Length: 125
Image (tube, rainbow, N blue to C red; front, side):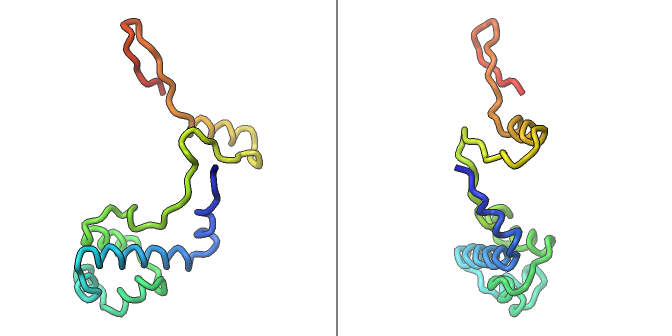
């Protein structure tokens, strides 16, 4: 079932930054780096890194990318997980206009397979 759990971060940015900070801290510890070491590598002071990890300091996008690179991590892995629809399930789109529903449904539906004359399958977009 589709959940709007990700919406909570849009309404409460403090929760978003806190979760990003927790993910950064976990990855930093996994890599065996100190706050001081990570901060220095990305051009920050240790108190700033501490505040980022606690979600008390918003992080600039370029700093976030520098942190991800220093931690040898995909930036997406440092973002909060958001609940997504299960494969094959559609989100509840009833509150949207027909045009928006059709657009979203078309974007979400898996590509249909089409058999060629030789019996092989190709994905049709």
